[in-house]
Length: 239
Length: 315
Image (cartoon, rainbow over all chains, first blue to last red):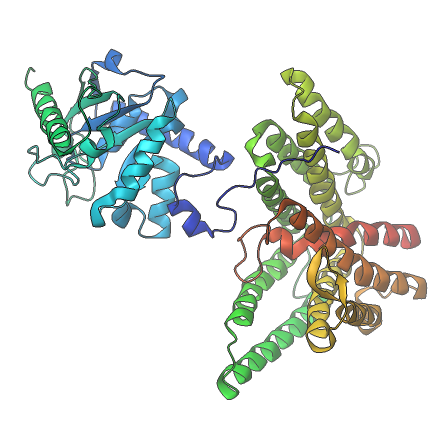
């Protein structure tokens, strides 16, 4: 008789807190339902409370795996970037979020994994494991990674230095990187404030670029970081 | 729908609550003595004990709130148990089947709550018993609707087991709320089934020597099983006030259904776990495993008891 194959989920023997903080997460019916409802509410909030304006939406290579890279000023950034992707791809958008902040307690893990669909990123110790997870994610078609190369929210709103992480994810692969710039987030919900103010948000989406022709190495990593930083900086320049 | 139970008037609930609290205090004291007096490591039993401290008020609270709360609670329990089964077997990945079984469980719950449209009797018994016909018919139709055959037999079979075993059979426990003697039946069943489990474990620890079903559950022993059966056969007489209208035959059968059926239910879920290759069905209850691990005996016992009581005593 043919054996049945049981696809046992990898996280079956983890308790709830561990399961929510683990990655990759198993597909979960209720999680998808809650995330979809939350996404509709968030998009409505961004549209009406922040009057978000998106420029360059056609630049998104939807259907392929790609990385969205943007300046980081507030908690709104990941939400705004996720909101430009069609709802159909909602569950394939993974904003990288600091594990030590967004997954440090059960309520935060629940919110980060269910609503934001965040990828827990280990900021400490070089983050080699997290980068490998990112590369693995991008190897499957249709997954979208959202990264903030500054690594933390800018306290002044000025564009900070781009850390090497983005370079190390991209080096040696031809995955498109889409530079974006979100204006107005620092006015709306800066680091330290509890409640967002109704400031207008403008999201500029640049043209996708690839770095596949450069050989992997420290020079390429540095080049990718400086090039992307320049592109993000220039995006907001022509207003 | 029957009227709400009233804690102030109902002595049954009060009697059981007192007995259970007394048992909990004794168990807690025993753990404390073992830990502080003899220095033994009781972290495992302590976690299990804490699990009981959470579960027991929930169960007694639902019973106190009345039949509707009890039925809805059992319905949710059913869905949680099915979710664990679906996750462990991989059925959860297919949302058509998963949602269909959830809807089936909701339908079973609703049929317990509504009155029969023609006679007005609480609980639509005929349609409740016929439920598997309609749900199985729908489950078999899903692959036809999707125009897909590959791998579908496995999903259909798992869904049928999930609905019939975890939804409909457990639903018989809900239907007991429509009886005149509902509180006595429910309290007795829940208490007796759990006591049967605990007795099997305790007798097994003290006297256990010969393995019961080595291929299915390596920790169960024949001695533990017989000890539990003895306790379960004696219990109906000890708690006779739960069903004063029962005769000797009914009491004997109750003892057998709980003593034998309870252990068969446990072994059935153990068999499923062994076949899949998992240790516990989930982690919902710290110290006990998943919800399905906790109610596996009740699933087996409830429908057998229901039909026995109905045959002998009407409803």
